[in-house]
Amino acid sequence: MTHLAQFIVLVFTLVVSLQVVIAQTLHQIQNIRAGSDPIGVDPLKILSLPVREGAQLNKWTIEKTEGSNRYFLHIQNAPPNVGVAGNGVVTASLDDKRVWEIVRDGQKNAFTIQLATGLWPGQYWTAGNGPTDTVTLRVSDFPTEDQLWMITPVVN
Image 1: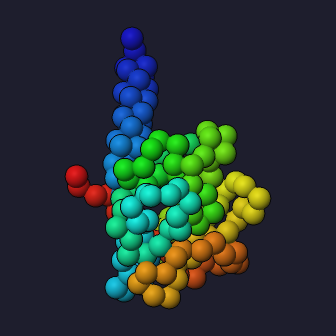
Image 2: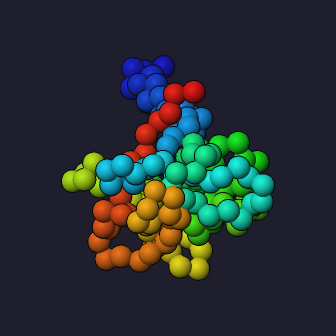
């Protein structure tokens, strides 16, 4: 095997390994406003719960899917077919999952989370005004501060 072929195999292996590590890492998602709590849901008694700030279950798996910057979002300790649709946590079949585009805003050192599929793509996750407000979806020409999120890995 030539050195170039070995290098290509090594790079491919590293990329695949990195994607696996990202998929297995839990994250917290928090609005960039000072004093904002991580977002999540309360214990899953029913499966159509709103996503809100200050909720008890607030660790997420971010699963890469087809397309640039496109991901599924799953809440920790939920069954595998439970994900985020709209601004609620719901059960979903594999073809019914909502895909989110997560894009880094370099100027603000934060991310936007924008609906990439469904009936109304292009809507941003938007934080409420209080510590326990629900996260809603809103269209915006340019993301505002309440639509910018910190996504940080959580050590188990």
